Amino acid sequence: MTGLQKYVFGVLAVVASFIVSATASGCKKNTVKFVPADTIAVLPADTANKRILALGDSYTIGQSVSEADRFPNLTALWLRERGVKVKYPVEIIARTGWTTADLLSGITSASPQPAGPYDAVTLLIGVNNQYQGRDTGEYRAEFKSCLGRAIAFAGGLTSHVFVMSIPDWGATPYGANYNRNQIAIEIDRFNAINKQESAKMGVSYTDITSATRAVTNDNSLTASDGLHYSGKEHAIWAGLIGEKILPVIK
Image 1 (cartoon, rainbow, N blue to C red):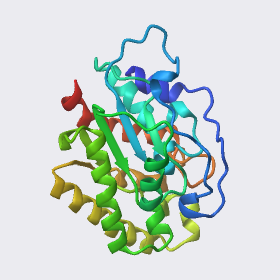
Image 2 (cartoon, one colour):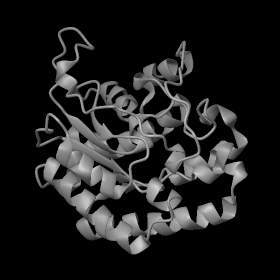
Image 3 (tube, rainbow, N blue to C red):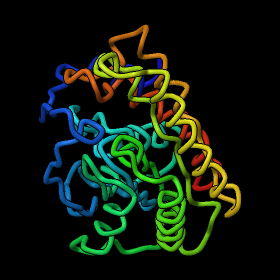
Image 4 (cartoon, rainbow, N blue to C red):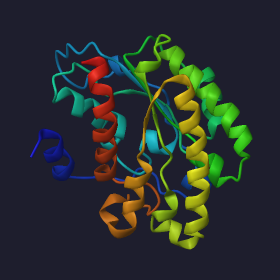
């Protein structure tokens, strides 16, 4: 068992900091602010020099799990175990409930502004566009803008940007209250768009949707609110995205 696995399964407390109501992607907005990782004294005498920026919504900020269980931070630990000196915790611009338009606005208003270039930038956005019934054409245009910002943060290096597919919240216990088949169809439609645009820009694309659909048969993969995902599921994502990031920044 690796150190990360021991961490995931040995966490003493996965505390839900917010219980969300039935709004976009669960989607009561929180007040998490952008905090530069190097201002937080997490590890004494830390000599890490690789930086990751994670852009997104509730899935990136880790709604209903601890900061340590957010997939960006688990990714950093995964990479550290393989010898990559990644700063921890990862820098994040994300809030629960954010659509693509909200993310663009959040990037612009982030204080302090993130200072690139970053060694890796992740982008996971779109579930709230789907939940709110937003237009797919609108999503395509705004996703392209989000992707453009991500590439800029990576110093213009498309190989250092990593897009992740939208999870299927319909498979969660909360999703049982809705038409799961229809949700899956719509999620696939939005994912087809972000995958196409990622391919056009030569950006890495990681499917995590399949893993999120497994939660129907495993409640341990969902957080206490029944809608978002547990640290165990975030660890799965961390492994998937870590495999893509590793050869680029090692």
